[in-house]
Image 1 (cartoon, rainbow, N blue to C red):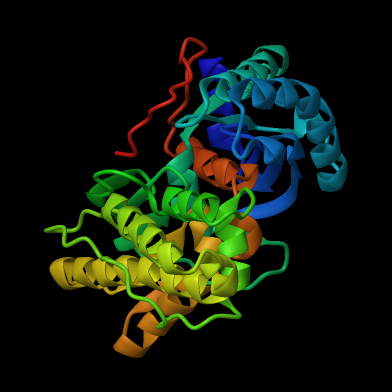
Image 2 (cartoon, rainbow, N blue to C red):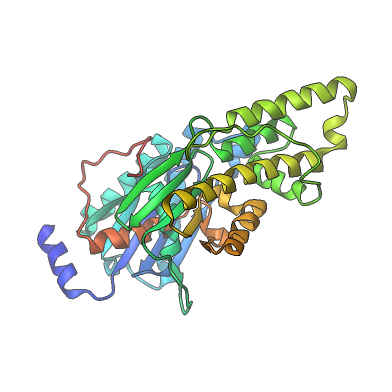
Length: 351
């Protein structure tokens, strides 16, 4: 296969990458040509809502059912055949091991059957480099290198120095819970559904973000902590419910707005500290929690301080194969290909 790869690199000016994402409960396939998106298809799994969280076994079974029709639809939308693909990029990790196994096995099977090179991708790098994805006929500015990235998801909250598409340096990370987990746990405590983050965001629009104050952990450096905030929220509710059993129902909008405001403040304060420390004044936002309207608004306001910000479109905040494909494109240019014995990794460091 190495001779084939060399031939592609020498002859192709337009590189077509098929991306496969299956790290959690969304099955996604996307096709890009260079940085331009041709198609992106995602199959969601509603089965998990009644359990209040993703059930790994159900997720992996659903991926097996979804992946072939999702691939078929992505090819139809791109008006391409499988043989038009130059390489196959897939999520190696981090994520749920059973889900990752489905996507990685499918990608390897395609690679063998089509004799196309295989590219393993770190899911988190996908969120970071999603800002280098453009849509057809879109005039878009890409972030310059180096820049900073604030990555906020259900399992990760990190500040990253992005030196290039191939070099990432973690400046700060959560020492306990991630921001997304903090949203979901609070939502569960006050009786909201799953996933809790979007529900809190919706109710917060109707509330007063300054009504209640919750503890903001004082963590040195650029690391984050959200366990103390969750504890503060829980104890506050416990004390209020002693005098008013209906306190949560009576104040649900203000509770959501105040809790969300506290998380946004923690994130922005650390982002500003990273900018001050590095003197890099370009920063991107990424990850599932970057869909939160308050965090997006606060991030946008950084422009008032002379900071250049890049905020993803909502459809690129969730897990999607388009971001996997764009990492695959840069790895293709760097001649960075994977082997068939690369095992999926539930934990997979970004740098």
